[in-house]
Length: 471
Image 1 (tube, helix red, strand yellow):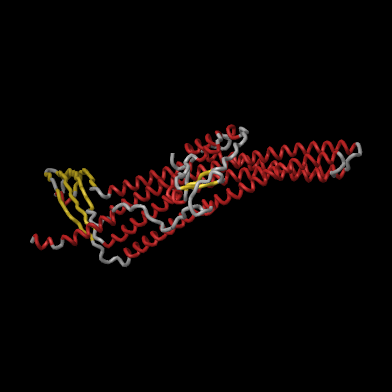
Image 2: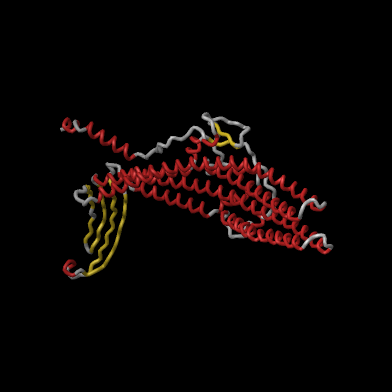
């Protein structure tokens, strides 16, 4: 008898090995997207660090998780600290992690025996069954059951729940990265509107002084009414810019309060403290593509969702296999005037035989969900590469544009001063003065917007690298 059973041992070993392989936690999955060795916008075929370039990369460069400190802005540091502590979206993401952790515990519990107890008591006259007499009846029992997970269905459920938990943890990190970037962008946008308002008011004061001078000259017949009306029109046009800028500024303040987890106005006293933004460090080191793809939490979340779909598909496939359960119970019953102690052991096997395609449909659905998860994973990888390339391109080109705008603003300031001098000496018309003042306002406003764009692009680079999720 023993020799006859032993001939099945190799087959049994193969089956058990296959089951163990299918039900073990799913490891990291490859997206099969080949990442470049170097960012295209940084040029070259070999990663190098060029400290003379605005942006440089190298294999030893790590992702910066404290990138906002490079802006050397104490107010920004305070706002970011508050947002990390109080932002509601980040807290929601944390709660989802706790939910997923509970889901994994629930899946793990299926691997262990389930023990339930019950008890009850009654007094009744059950007619014929109690000889038309009132009796007291009580019972108590303990039932233990265990699903013999021979084919690894519950282990696969646990693996799927573990991957989902890991995905939610990575999603929380991605929310943190996005929050940091959004706070920094909104903060610099608020500073940009603040500067635009100051520049507009400064130009408005200059234009008003010019108007006052013209009105005095008109009384002395040294200036025409046409020049006065042109000056008034320019003053009115410049004044009309301030309300729209103020509205945008207030909206930025409100947004920063919201991101910090507070009602509008709560942090205005801190934010309204006027301060000069520090010059940017134009020698930024960027991690290589391989490190960025390994660091970005949204990629980790997509990869873990794909891993969960693999386990979920295996769960669906085990629908063809039998369920084997072991059950035991022990109890005590008491009824006037007798008592007993019932107990029992049982094994139950349930094998699907005919279900009209239900299991096939579940497998097909799980297979389709796995394909979706895989394609989403690949799309996320491609999107990450695109994000960084776009951010690098925008920053590099804005650096060139900013230099031209800075030079243009200086030239327009000099031109405005010269044309006013020429006007006083009779060598230029007042129209030339108005044009020079208008061009100066446009040039200074454009330069301020470019300064904001540079900071915004730099924030986008740090966010595209996935920096900020690690404490």
